[in-house]
Amino acid sequence: MMESQYYFACRACGYECISGIGIERGPHFYRAAMVCNHCDEVDTFAMPNPGSMVDLPAGTAVCKTCGSAEHLTVWDGLTCPHCKQKMKAIGTNTKTKRPFKFW
Picture 1: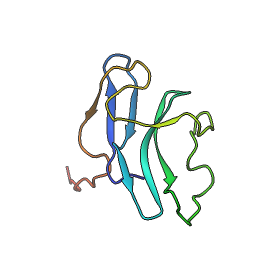
Picture 2: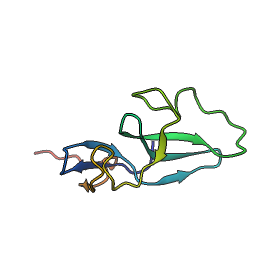
Picture 3: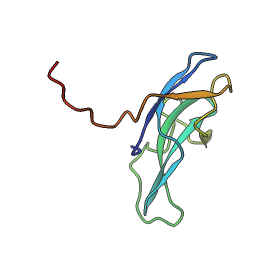
Picture 4: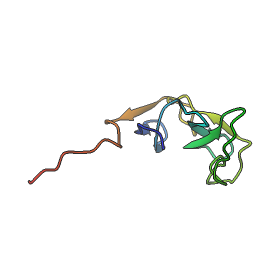
């Protein structure tokens, strides 16, 4: 998964998701927050770099809802895939470790 992920909410239509923003590049593949334009869902996908010699596991570059890779585009992190209004990231990184509290 991406190093940082945030909770996003759309005030206009109520759509919610947890995703990263942008693209994180590695030596053999990159992870990108992408939106499926067919089913209007946001998720993080691993995609191979051009010329990479490493094969990704099967099913990592396809939408989990519709099973297609044809409709995936990089998500800008602001536009709601349902109503095309602006979304807002709420809170801090969801992957940060919280301190243990006794109370």
